Image 1 (cartoon, rainbow, N blue to C red):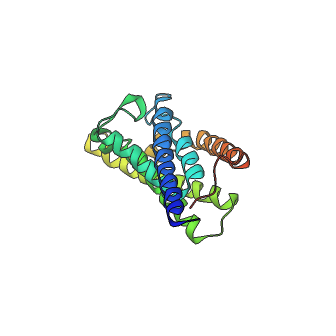
Image 2: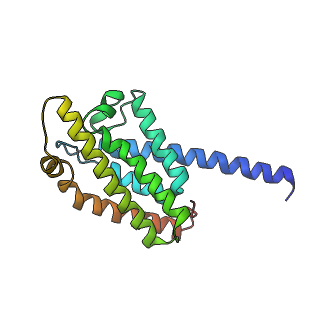
Image 3: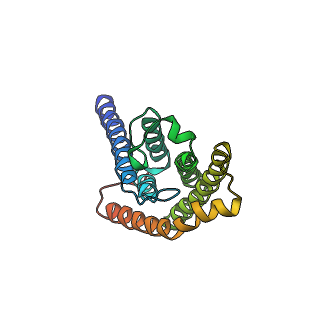
Length: 192
């Protein structure tokens, strides 16, 4: 290949990567709108986060998650319940949304530091989810305390984590199955 052909291919690859990151951010928004109301709404956001990371890889996937959060912070109603703005991020559920970034960073770290493969990808997603739960729960307790509605750690875990464990495991399994099928069909390639 000539230098011009290499530059053209690299440009196409960058354009495709940016497009896929934006597309997955949009998918995350759509998945957040599919909501079952609760103290912390049950949505398909975590499914979209898992799928984003498995399809785009850690680096581009984390950028896509950050893009989603920034769009919501700017006021576009991409969060659960068609909400947007900084008030959502500093509110009781904001820690779980920001915790999605930890999922991406952990997934990226696993991809760079540890042997690759489906077991390690799933392990990275599970660890990322646990960190997201921890960060979000601490954030929830602080935000509720500011609102003068005290929650103990046990009460916060009961309201904000325990009801989501099985649904999140099912979402993880669905994301793994879909990503595996997309890879098998050659629609995505492995990225870090």
